[in-house]
Image (cartoon, rainbow, N blue to C red):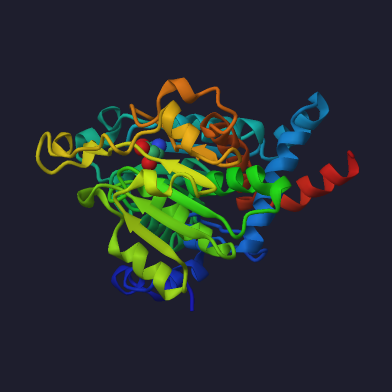
Length: 358
Ligand code: ASP
C-alpha cells in the first residue's frame, strides 16, 4: 500500500507507528521527518556518528568544500510561521554546510497568506520551487498533512518538521539525544540512566519528543517534575507504561535532584495560555536551578535546556562544566546537517570521505 491509496481521513486515523512506514527511504533514513517515533536505535546511532563525522570533516577547508559540494544543486525553503532563533539558524547553517541554497518565509503577513491563501496552498507552492521544506507551525499535524499531500503530488519533496504546535519537535529530540550520547560516551554510554524533566511539561513539545526517543535506550528512568497544572500528558505516560518503562510523576524537584544523571529544564510556555495571565498564577518558584541546586546535583550529572530560557536556570551556573545547554545548541546544527544529508541519501558518501581522510 502507498500513501496514494489512503485519503487524508484514513491516513490521519492510522497509529503513528503505521504512518512512519510510509515515509522511510530505502536505506532506512526518513524521507519526511515528522515524528520522533521514526527513529530507532540503529538510526540514532548512525545519525549521531554522521553528525560527529561532519563536524570533524568541516574543520578543514578541503573538508568544508567537499561538504558544500554535496547538495550544491539543491534548494531549501525554511517556512517558520512561529517564532524561532536557534532552530531556524541551525537549520539555515546546516543547509549552508551542505551547500544548499536557502530561502525563507518567517512572516506570514508578507506572503500570499495575507491575501487569504491557506498554509497548505503556500507550502504546495514552495514545493514547485524547492527541493526541501523545513517547517515550523503553530498547528499540530500540519507537517504531516503536507507530507501526505506532497507524497501524492508530482513534486514529492521532503518535509522536515521543525516544531509543530504543542505536540512534536523531533529534531530538537535528535539534538538532545546526541548531546546525551556525547556526554555519556566516555562514562559507560546512554543506558541505565535517569533523566528528570522540569517545568512546563504539559505544553512543551521538546519533552514529549525526547521521552519518546529515549525509549530506544535500555533502562532509562523518566522523572517528570512540574506543578500539577503543567504536568506531562497522560498519552506519554501510557506510552511509557505500555513499553514497561519506569517513570515518576512528582511536584518535588529537590527530592530527586541528587540522584539523577540529567536534568532537562524547560520554560513556561505561556504563549499557549487560554486565559491571559493564566500561567502567571501558577507558583513555579520550586522549579528553578541556581548555584544551590547545582550543589545538590551529582558531580557527573548534566544540565540541559532546549532554550530559550527565562529565569528557570540562573546565569550564575552558565560556567559550571555540567551546564550543557550551549553545547546542546551547537550540537543541533551538526545533527540537523546529518539529517538533511541523510534525507538526500548522502550519508554513505560522507562516511566514506571521513574514513578515507583519516
Ligand atoms: N525552542 C523550543 C521549542 O521550540 C523550546 C521552547 O520554545 O521553549 O519548542
